[in-house]
Length: 264
Image 1 (cartoon, rainbow, N blue to C red):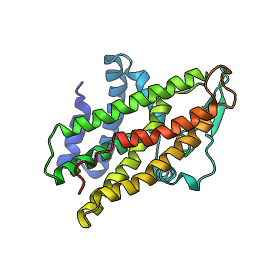
Image 2 (cartoon, one colour; image 1 turned 90 degrees about the horizontal axis):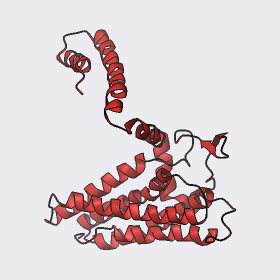
Image 3 (cartoon, one colour; image 1 turned 90 degrees about the vertical axis):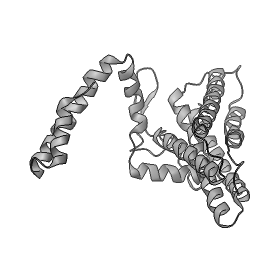
Image 4 (cartoon, rainbow, N blue to C red; image 1 turned 135 degrees about the vertical axis):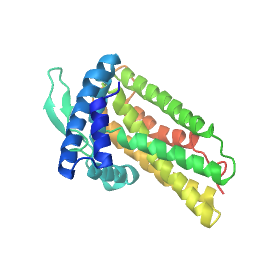
């Protein structure tokens, strides 16, 4: 799947064989051809890739403004009153098309959860390294523990929605349950910093944990309260209990995936 046009244009621009104006034009052409190549090459070569890309694209439609607002909302949810998602237009099946994250801070995204997970894993590796216990296997072990825990959490929440006969998108649940990694990253950063300078890494981590776990739990409480319809199945579990259960589970999962063994 090599694209010679894109490679040649990039090489010419890098070596200075063409002027600045022509370089920019060539790079724009190469970018366009590369995009077309991906659309016509990879999409046809990998079955189901196009569908996955179309499904994931709205969850990565973010900008700097959205990321700042969403991170603030996850860590300080008590300061916000508006939690309902912005509806763009109704669909024939009775559901709604919602605004993208760029236009609505209440829209779920996968950019912050994925970047937060990566940051948390690297901070944990740094913690192991400071203690002289780092091993390359640490990275996949921590990542797999977080991912498996989140998958089980998503399955449990999805079963709850099924019992209540309430619709929900799996990617929405992955997004909502992934915001915990932002709090975990803040916890680990606090533990590493305070532990390095003052030697109270454990205390700092758990002090920060009380705040971030409470914040994430409240965030999930408000999100789920808006996701679950007021009227659910008469024979299913009570809506109020399920919302509280989903929110309370964040304390348990944040605790379970914490890596504090080698904090100073």
